[in-house]
Length: 278
View (cartoon, rainbow, N blue to C red):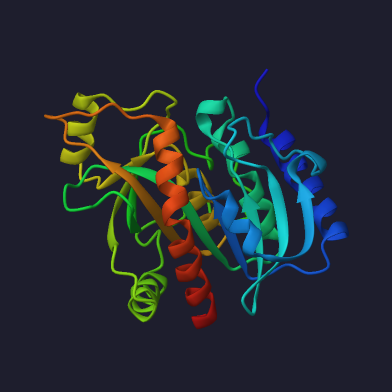
C-alpha cells in the first residue's frame, strides 16, 4: 500500500522533532554528498555524527558508495550539516522519501542547499574530471515530490522554478573557482533519469538534443523540495565521463566513482571557499 499524504506529513514531523532534540543547532547550509564523494565528509570538523539508521523515517542507502550519516560540524569557519550519502528513485523510494532529509532540515531553519553528484557528460565541450555548476535541470523521473496535498506551512502549492539554482551562488562559485585556481569548471543543464540502467546511445542523443549537458540519477527531487521550502540552491556535478552517441564507450559504475574521487579535493576546496564568501 502506498504512503498517504497524512502519513508522509506525520513522518516528516516526527523526524523534525527527533532532530530538534538531537542537534544543538541547525546550520544555515546543507551539503549533500553524491556518488564517490563521501570522503569529503572526513574534512568536516564534526560535532555530531548521526547514522541515518537512527533517524526516524530516514530511508536506508543501498548503494555502497553512499555511507549514510548526518554530520553536524564545521567546514573551515562555517557551520554545516552534511548528508553523507543519498537515496535514489531507482532504489525503490518515492521522490518524497528521497527528499525527506532536505524537507526536515528546511523545516529546522536551513537556508542553503549545496547539492553534489557525479554525472555523465553529454556536451562534448565538457571534459572528464571537470566540475559543472548546474544552471538548470530536466526532470525525467516521471514523478514530482510535491505531488499530492500541499502543506501550506511548508511552501506554496505552485512554487516558482524560474531560477531553481541561485544566480548569486552560481556567480560566487565561479569567482571562488578563479580565486582557487580551479580551471576545470563550466556550467550546464543537468538531466535526471530514473535509472538504474545507464543510458543507451539513442537516449544519450535524445538528452543532448533536449538541451542537457550532463545526466545523472539524483538531486532533482531534493532541489524541488528545497525551492518549495525557500532555500537557495547551488548544484555541483562532477563530470566523470563524456560520451559521444556515435562512438559510444561502455560506462562502468566503478569508473564513475573513481573519477568523482579524483576531483573530490578540488570540490572540497571550492565549497569551502564558497562558504567563506556567504
